[in-house]
Amino acid sequence: EKSIAANIVSEIKTALQKTNGCISWERLASFIAGGENKVQPVSKTTLAKYVSATEGFRYFVTQTLPQCTTERTKKWRKTWSTNFHIFWEGAKMVANKVQVVYFHIDEKWFYSLVIRMYNKCVPALGVQGVWSRIHHRNSIDKTLAICAMAFVPRENDIRKGGTAHKVT
Image (cartoon, rainbow, N blue to C red):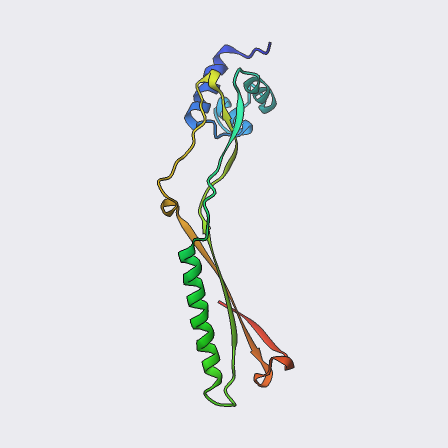
């Protein structure tokens, strides 16, 4: 059976409870030492062996994976792309010498989630797994990334080549 200094066990328990088990072994060792540049009484390997040997220990992952596309979103994207295509095709009909620019835009919504792996659940030290629940996926912050490219064909003929430009 593994043993460790009695006064350090309370510090381990305090650190794990304070962070709900979301702390690396290295940061746990630093916390017990009292800071980054302090002498560590116990190495991170020893801490990992001791804590993982306690009864009921396990790792868990916090993760939320909502669906990014809905029928409403697909319908909106289709309407937008159809209207955009009609606009650019209509630009060709103005005159024969009008320079046509082919434009491609791609947008992607990303959910702003922090996924934490290797969280520690240690019932022997009073640390239970914490699972964050959300009422609805619209409650999650989202970030939009857009990439746009323009292609200018030579003499309005795509077969003759042209130049591509990143649109910023």
